Amino acid sequence: MVTRKEREVFRVPVSILVLVVLLAWKLVLPAMIIGLFLGFKYSFEGKDDLEKANELMNSAENVANYVKKEFAGKEEDKEDEQ
Image: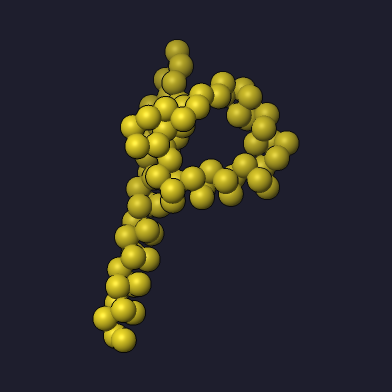
């Protein structure tokens, strides 16, 4: 499931996602990474134990938020120097 601002954007079955990533990974993976920086969240749902996969997605989101904050801080520092 892909969400942004607590609203569901779309749902994709994991098997379809895996197939699309395998066939078009040069497009899909960068798009997913850019999506993290734009505030999208990725999660997995199902009958299997997907806690580890969701923890990984949360970690990726945390890294993207950290990078955004660091970048914003460096931009503010540049403005202060001028």
